[in-house]
Length: 102
Image 1 (cartoon, rainbow, N blue to C red):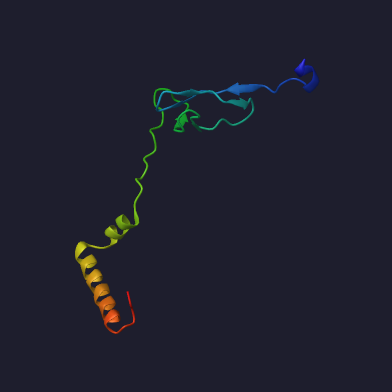
Image 2 (cartoon, rainbow, N blue to C red):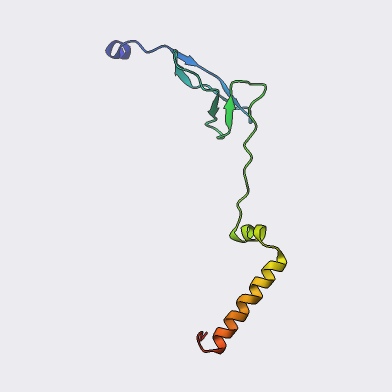
């Protein structure tokens, strides 16, 4: 009944994609469409490909770095001590002159 009103459905091609967790996804494509080599798994979000024996490995994620971690990459401990002592001397000099009250 629905096809009579809208016409015949376009021919479709169902393709199986496999992720590293063993999930199979079968999206439908138009028969004349170019099928992509990779597809995101809707269950786990990992990349999937057409080869069930060799699915793509999960992407490597970089751990979150704090501001301090980035600073430690740029400065050695000796440099940090020198910068801190210089800043403290400047603050003490400003306090001694009455420029900083707290």
